[in-house]
Image 1 (cartoon, one colour):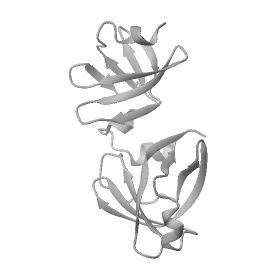
Image 2 (cartoon, helix red, strand yellow; image 1 turned 60 degrees about the horizontal axis):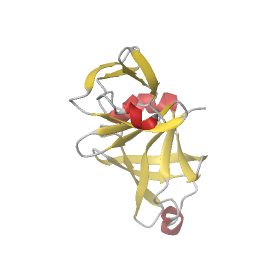
Image 3 (tube, rainbow, N blue to C red; image 1 turned 120 degrees about the vertical axis):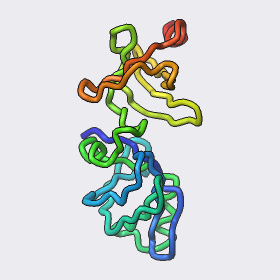
Length: 171
């Protein structure tokens, strides 16, 4: 199963084990209908947690009550842990306009695919997309000057990548 990162647990809330999930789904949501969220307690190890209750706090945060997390201390152990959704759930809850919705898309430059977007890193003035370029990790900037188009049907992000940018990843 393929999982997509949606954010991380940033705080506890109250005394009964509630947590605050800061997400990058691009819209206010209470994850209505979602039953399970996966937390990465150790690198690459996703543990499922059943959602008892979820309430939208604001555009980018959700209060969550998870099954088995009954105390503030138990919730505290989950802070700073990354939160993940299986790919099909992810696409149900992520806004089409949020940068995170580009996960799994291919970056196209000069008519060729240079790699699949494995991670989206949001920064104040641009978005960085992590791809695997010939076996090396490459960070490709996406901003209004380089973005030519996003093709939702083909799952492609067409970029005008500045000359020399890819060369730094090619020894």
